[in-house]
Length: 343
Image (cartoon, rainbow, N blue to C red; front, top):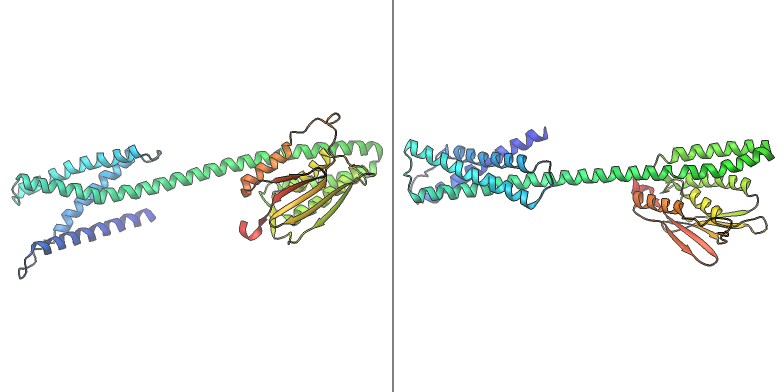
């Protein structure tokens, strides 16, 4: 429907333009007091020449550019090839028709004016059409590029999200294995909580963002698992100056942050690890005491979890994570996105 409308508008515009050209040309050639020498068929014949210029330009465009990357050389080839064919063909048709009906003598001046008119017609009509076609082609290629980049980003995000599951799974299955041997009832409770959390992770990771409120609920349950794994080894404090239901963040970000703290630091009932969650503007800060584990008993980490999280943040919200490390503390800063902005 849109294509037919565009064609109709083009026809009306060409007919209107040719009518004005013929009308004002007749006025310019008519002296004061003389009747207007206006030929009603003039706009029709001129319009045919205009349509010929457009058709030849479009055919050259289809043959040389359409579906390919736009380049200066390709544009020049389209314009020059269509111009050369139109000038020769149109001049031959006009002069041949005029010679056949005996309207004009084929002298050098008249032939030159006919050629110049053909050049101007192609420049105006063919050039305008070519510019419109190129604009649409460039826009199509840009949209295709954006779609391709989005598909690649979504594929990478999906791959990064899937990398989180095994890390969470293996750590807690080890705890479950110990509890089954030591306290079957406690193991049953732990398994229920673990299954609930893992189900949440599978559902949450289908989305690129999730509300901070839901992520905090998940973190609270995750801390319950930590309490089973490391009794009285961690203390937790939450202080927010925003509505957690009005902002979003990357799913599983808090779980990964907490797991990172547990993995790289020493904590015990006699020296509990303090963890605080606060916000500073549109950043969520997770801060903990810094007590690194010895590399002798624990191989040096490559921090793949934080790298994964940073890549997801960059891909989804165009903001990376940031880390502030001192001799006594470690602070992970996560980007938050307003719910209204994302929608």
